[in-house]
Image (cartoon, rainbow, N blue to C red):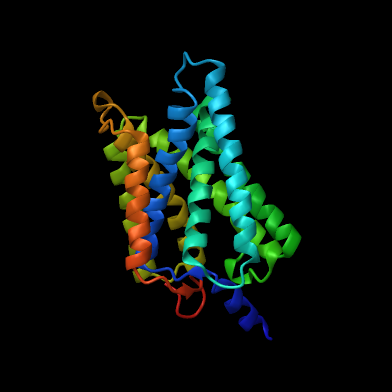
Length: 270
């Protein structure tokens, strides 16, 4: 089997990058925000400056739980021989929830704030990419042809989700507020869409840029659901918001076409 066939075989384990893909991805990232906060904040204790050690414990326990779930699902995903929509999206959700609790720990519990946390997480993304390149000689998703490459793929996704969470919280807690931050990230995604349709900028770069930006968009939307009305939110129950988002996501996975496809940069990819 030649290299193109091997690449196509592996990439067939991920969904085609369509409008439906991005809609479900945004729902998944929003669910990751509300789901992560449900466990680390609502169930393990509200995280406020006065919470003390409970603050750190909530984020650490949440990160541990979601981290274990992510490792298990990613391992099953890597061993799978073809694209399974429910497995793929479950792994994405696990990466977003783990990213939520890990980002909150980095930006809040470590005492380095959003700028420091964002820089730390950006460094993690860059280190992941560097390790991927030094180990396998390429960081292109089109070069993912085996378990080692796919392991780096999911590690990079998880760090990018974590970085996106920190960026979303940073923007939402500033002058923009939750609605303003959500509109800002949505606008950035529209700009990327325009670049995609009207330029020849690398499709791989645009895919990863959009993939990262959907995470802060989801984070700000998730925070808008559950934050107090006085702070510009809807003050909805986090578990209830998570159930609604999970139901909407499951419905779309059933209703929208879920076909295997390649990442941008391969022939016929979005």
